[in-house]
Every structure is written in structure tokens, then in C-alpha cells.
Image (cartoon, rainbow, N blue to C red; front, side, top):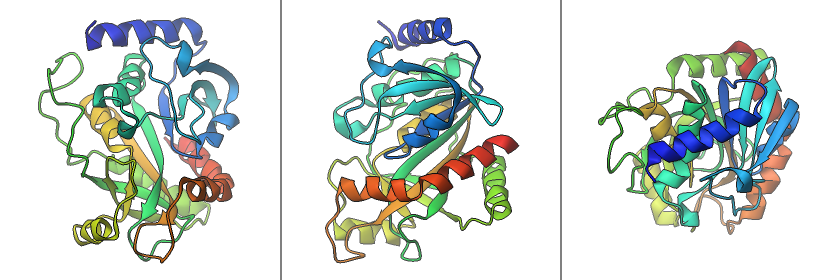
Amino acid sequence: MTLLEKIEQTSSYIQEILKDKPKVGLILGSGLGVLADEIDNPQIIPYSEIPHFPVSTVEGHAGELVCGTLKGKHVLAMKGRFHYYEGYTMEEVTFPVRVMKALGIGTVIVTNAAGGVNTEFEPGDLMIIEDHINFAFDNPLMGKNHSQLGKRFTDMSNAYNKDLIKVAEEVAELIRMKIRKGTYTFMSGPTYETPAEIKMIKFLGGDAVGMSTVPEVMVAVHSEMKVLGISCISNMAAGILDQPLNHEEVIETTQMVKAQFISYIKQILLKI
């Protein structure tokens, strides 16, 4: 079965269930799925019931689509995402973004938990993603290009929409919240980076590092969708502090900032 056929089957299945047509897609990273619990009149579809959808295997990723309204906007939230390190192909990792586009979604807010590389950052900070570096050395757009989905060669110079970044900055100022801005670096995982790798990332201009987001953003831009990226700095990256890294700390930090994160995204939705 071709990618186009899979997208058609999956989007048709979801369309038959949904009461409203979503306009904004939310991809919620580790520990950040709490935002989906705020959605009014939710319709919940487990990934396991959706044709051609992979299944989340990571703690902190519930593995379900939640559709409804949030601050008056019709949204479709991924409560948990898929990762390259889980053994999924790049096509599988980014398949939900293709489906979002087929459902008529034009704007995607992508969130993640990330390690802080910039030493001015602190765990619990939120960072607007201005740009990214792909150190996984793979690309979901490799292989056959379907012109119905997007152009063969995709311009990534404005991958993170400048108008949405401006809105995110204005909202942070409005609610008097400290916000960071920076470059997100994508590593394949599942190992955390070595101190030497973090030194390299810092030298090359990376401010945060993680194991997701970039493939989804590439496909969203290929699909001519507007993207806003927000990282929660869940810990400082390897070698910055003399302490071991673990996923439990990631979840703990995202729980600590969940109220601020929820308020922030809600206010952004009001203005887009």
C-alpha cells in the first residue's frame, strides 16, 4: 500500500469519528500531554484503533488522539508521539503530520522536553524554537516524492514561522513569563548525548537537544503548514552539571511546569 493510500484511509477513518473539523494540530512531548486534558468536549481515539498508526512505547506518552476545542479553537492533539529511536521509520514517525494535513489542519504547535545546552538556561524554562540542527543524519523526505504532498525540494529557511514566533513572544510578555529562544538539536537517541557531543552542539550553535520534533517539522513544512515549536528544558545536558541523566527527571520537570505550560499554550491559541 502506498503512502498516499495510507493517508487516505487513516484520515477518512478519523473524519468519520470527529464532530468538528480541527484547524490546529498539537504534538505533545514527554510529560506534556496534560494539555490535552484541558480540551473541551473531547473525542478520544487510541492510536491502537487508528489504521496505519504506530503505537507509543515511551513513558509519558499516553498514545491517543484528542479532538475538541481549546480556547475556542478546534484542535487535534497527539497525546504522545513516535520516535525514530523506537525503531519506527521516518515515514512512520511523521505519518500523523501527513494525516493532520489531510484533515485540513494548517497550523501545528510542536512541543518537546529537551536538554539544556545553553548554560544560561535552567530546568523548567520554556524555549521558543527558532531553528534546528539535524544530527540524526536521516530525513523523512528522502525517497519517492509525492507531488500531491509537497515539492521535491523543501525550503527550511523559515521552518519555524516567524509570525507565530512573534505571537509566542508577545504572549510571554503579556503573562509576564520568562521565555527563552534558541536552536533545537535533533539526535537520534535513545542514548543521551556524551559530554563531548554536547560541547560540539554548543560550539555549532545549539541551545537545546532532544530526540524528536525535527522530522515532524520537516514534513509539516513540506506540507506547507505553519509551525510553532516549544521546548521545555527538562534537564541540563551531559557534562554541564556533574550528575547522571534519566527519563524520570524529564517527567518530573515537565510536571513541575505543567500549569505554566498549559496557560502559555492556551494564550497562544487565543491569538492565532
